[in-house]
Amino acid sequence: MLRLIITRAINGILFGIMDALLHANPFAQRLLSVYKPIARTSVNAAAGIVIDLSYGFILGLLFLLLYKSLPGETGIVKGLSFAMIVWFLRVLMSVLSSWMMYTVPVSALVYVAAAGLVEMAVLGAIYGIFLHPFGN
Image (cartoon, rainbow, N blue to C red):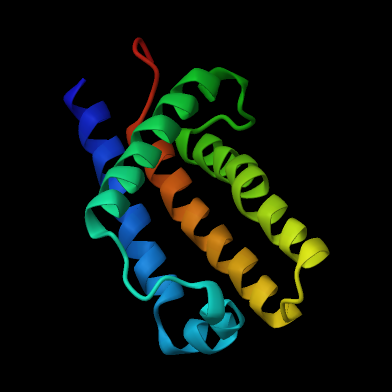
């Protein structure tokens, strides 16, 4: 039970850290400057922490619920499979919607998709290594 709580909390914290590293670096800022006119000038850090921790806990729970249905024999393969599903539903669908609805440079969209893939792969690998259904 302690492993479950710690792993989910770590992934929640990693959500925030990776978001900051992947989206606040100078390269990303140049690519994502198209959003500057509508971007907030400051971030509500407390709300961000709560949201990222919630993501970590909710995705950890979903991973455990889907564990036996995920392809792969090992936890890490299951974690990466889960990561691909979450990446598709969370990142790729958002990128494709942005491409359809807004005038955003393709380079920015490709960066968001790739950064999201890296983020989801790291989180999925951590879930796969450390989380297993009870009794496994």
